Image (tube, rainbow, N blue to C red; front, side, top):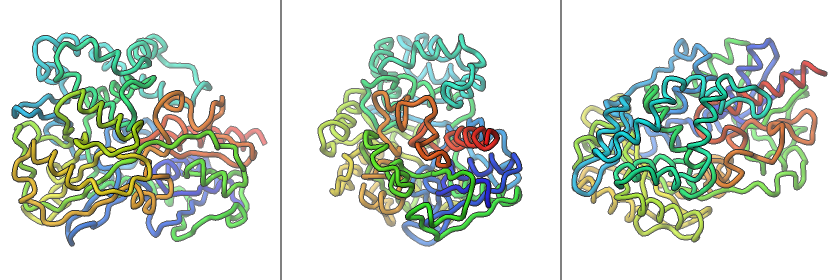
Length: 469
């Protein structure tokens, strides 16, 4: 009998398996697809030689993850590559606000009225970042904070809606950039705790940047898999699980799946019926004949570029997708240009680039023209550089990754109490009514992102259960 079986070889499932194998337990991972990776994969989606990340591409939470930083993943080929700027937010006049590694440079890009406000907001938290990130990504309600005063200061700023926090800024340059940071959670800006989302992305960028993995996001998953195998763990691909009886006997079963899939496979009935899935995205991967011709020079040297003229435009786009059930006419775009940092992603002189805009769950329309109109506003001539494009709306995203129910790449709405308490209101969010079944996906705390911390935390819960038995 195995000690633990993990269902799903995404970053969280692989991290859970590694953590248990490091404790000397026998572990096997079962993945339905033919490759490991989940939301951290790399494929040739457009043309030969152009390597795209179908989902996550820039990894501010990955490089800052306490779980990943405690593993020797560099020995297994993981290398982080950085652009000159982690992120840029261009404006119609050709200027841009930036998220730089330097707090001062970032503040200066907002203009004189808001520079001091921004410095006062983030500068006191940044020296305590490593302790802070461990505190808010730790096993919920079971670990005492290492620095309760800093955590409380962060909470006072972050727990209210981001719209409250942004009232501190006088000009829209700062509000627009911060709105874009919050929008990575794919939720309306006025929700509880959304200020914390923006602060986390800003602090992560200042602390260690927003890098890509050399060769693609698949490198993260491959490094975790290689490390797991060196620890004695096994990984089985092309192995779809429909019920617990499809798995070998084990003391614990850990699911890197949606709550819906877990309930179906483990026979938990309506246990997760109140779990809410959120809005989706429409994603385009491009093979380009050259770099994106951004008007703003800062955007040309940034790894991630946010495309939205102002905070009101961003709020309207999110509201349309999340609350009004329609695709926005002028979508807010999150874009990543990996080949700016990693030329190996494309043939010499060519580039890969992706962009997504927010759309309602399950939406089956085509946002390509609206996305490219937005890009042309800030990068005139963009369409002339397109060699090929691959599109993926909610149905395609859900087909590629079963965790993306309705195309929700966050594996659950990141809004309301579900931002903080997921997948259920519980003191032990990784456990289920079945004593041997656990959940470790992004549907569990601390939530979405390629950071492995949901798997890390779930592994601790599993270890405690096995040790007590």
